[in-house]
Amino acid sequence: MGVLDGKVVLVTGGGNGIGRECALIAAREGAKVVVNDLGGSLHGGDEGSIGPAETVAKEIIAAGGQAVFNTESVTSLKACEGMLEQALDSFGGLHAVINPAGILRDAMFHKMTPENWDAVIEVHLRGTFNVCRATIEHFRNQEDGAYVLYTSTSGIIGNIGQTNYGAAKMGIAGLSRIIAMEGAAKNIRCNCLAPVAWTRMTQSVPVRDEAQAARRQQMAEAIRPDQPARFSVALLADAAKNVSGQIFGSSGENIILYSQPRPIQTETKAEGWTVDTILSEALPNMQEKFYSLNRLPLPPTPKPADAAAG
Image 1 (cartoon, rainbow, N blue to C red):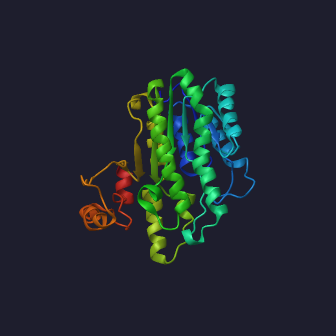
Image 2: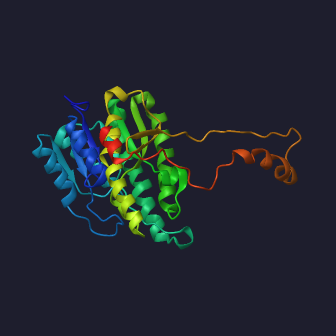
Image 3: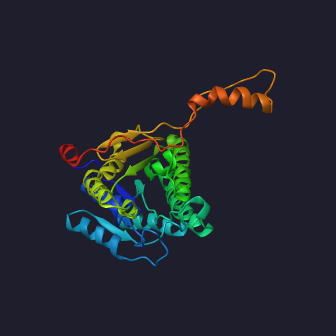
């Protein structure tokens, strides 16, 4: 018996990395799984391949589970509607979506081309819209459904060289929150997760020296894709039905709950502000609470021995 017995789950980007682990773990927990993966490269721009999604589906079936594969792109709303239809035709329903599908097109903003900006927004933000829009009415009609959408610390905290990725991922956080608010009356949950894991995306950053290579090896052992995948699957369980509208993180064996932007200080002047008083009073009064431009640290990554013990 698993926590997803009787449920049908769509996993996008399910052929590699965290998505692959999500599909495998969901199946082990009893779900019937639609494994979607275009089969393209990390940076996009190719024709894709039937291989990754089919391989994962076959692995699930070989282990005694039920799965079908899909190789369409999340950038097409029609294709996402087809994923819903495939779930209904194959398994008679759809109860949850995990959506980690994504690409990278990193560059400093002053070198960011419109093509690279559009490509990342199209896959991440528009792709998330498409997957949710294609399934939301089905979830509303059955008054049950759960989404796990993927945001990133590149948006929540910031990361140099990833303005396109960070912007898209923060857009997903806003989208997730409002889907959760609108869906509450229909028993629809939506949360988003900022994972830190050793995947094709983290491997794509160039190695500069032997010390960095050694650190990467330690990271590969300590921050594995199965860790955020386990958390993603847990959020779909009936036991998590009271969890919605949150931003979580997963890094190694750390499970993180992020704050969400709320006012932290208000300056008021009854007679009205002028440009001069804004500069001399309002901004100086707030300055102690300004966020630093430095990238804030995440909780410490467990050492491989600690991760194994956890």
